[in-house]
Image 1 (cartoon, rainbow, N blue to C red):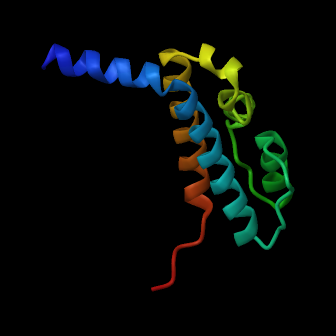
Image 2: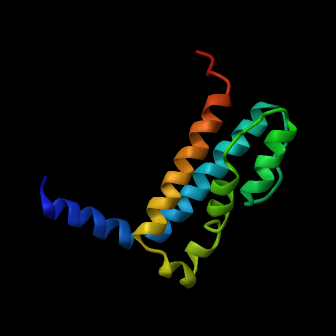
Length: 116
């Protein structure tokens, strides 16, 4: 592998860490709200993924193993867009992206199949 490419990717992740954290939250939130809508539940106007997770569970879905990921991602709902978000680094971004992937994977399994 090209070490320069690896270093470039690491530098890019570091540079965009706040954005990656914020987008990880946003993607998870939108998927969770889409699932609620598909179940005919009006999503709360919130960025707190724990509240959305509770609503999904109240609608009859188990949604196991997402509590910690939702808690982590909720910390990235607002902070990355302000100066405090500049303290977020590569490890934060990689952790947030992995958490979002887990949330989205579970949610996508429950979404209805598209009608073609």
